[in-house]
Length: 146
Length: 379
Picture 1 (cartoon, one colour):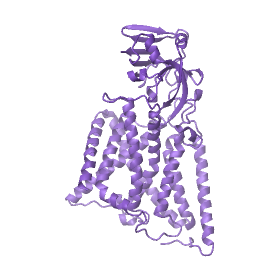
Picture 2: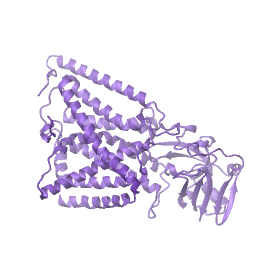
Picture 3: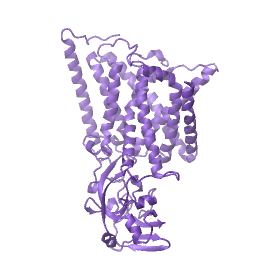
Picture 4: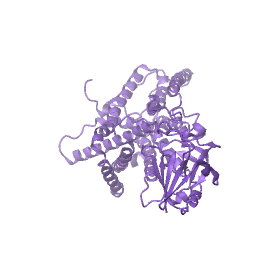
């Protein structure tokens, strides 16, 4: 274990030292922006995104009928993460003057279609699960477990 | 209710080291691919003296940079699930008394903060850059490069610190000690499958920028690879402030104190070669075309220079970071390296660099200089 840790730690320290030497070349008037982006990502995740997901989970466990819970989680992970990484194209920033070969798809329309499809699929999956659970002999999905 | 949550406040039904370890393993793999292909791009753009970039395979830059953006994009859902699975640990109370444990705790927290900050920084700036959106006041290339090294260092430290946990977690079945599933919920195994699915969807939704058969699927792809004459454009003539040239235009080739001028007709009268080569960008997009023009090796012969001369290409652009590029001798010698005059059977469109541009195998797109005005030849 210790040997492996040394094998990992030596290049790690070398990489960080090299990174520091590169960062030392960054002009001082850019530092505020660099720090804003380095710290901002962590703050946005830990302070906004993660708490929102926790609250959504609490709401779902309280209000969402059991058959729809797993489909809703799947919908959130799939469509939520894709939406997040599509922010640059969804906000339409970055093209000036317009270059026809860059960002030339109907992103916002696609997003709404995808959103509608996600909601429809979550609803449908929940109905199927509910229907199945009502058949005799199937495990009940009807009650909330604590 | 109005207190800081504690670790025990969070459900531990799905959260478990076995889950975190598996998602973390694939997150580590995708991000390491992104790191390696990113460093490779840096080498291709600013080649260090000890390295010689080969001209073959001609698709090397295209594939590595496509992979760079695809694996970085697929890492986004993996990162989100990974961070969700360990989120309660944010609320571990640090030991307050000064002790060895307190120092170790602080170091571990610090390495995780560094890792998280660098990963989110890299993914956010990388995704924005691929859309050519720069909502910051620093140079993208130097910072994306420097923070990549912060990331790889912090990742290695994180793995070293967590080694016993990782071993134990990956050696155990993912559903070990998993509490009874409440009605309607996911299992850990189910959550893992959904996570792999999310990474796949993220890749499919964007990969069409470089994988041509995915063009119709990639609804969030920044480009489709399509464009004037069938090839995408990074910078149009208008963006580069290039005006169309007239008959009086001449290409200047300087060698050994002499300067030769070539008109477009003279260049067209020379032996013409055609090659299928991609324009490939570090932003993860690429598109291929059939380029026709004069092999640079032939042009070297025409001015009496060795065919493996080093060439410094200067564009008509008045400014911009990529106004010039340098071709090493073995690129000039490779007969696929063209001073292209045509694309897909037509004279080069102004946006593709009319009257002539450099096109070489295995080159970053920004080094395929357009609107060439002068070639400085050095034997």
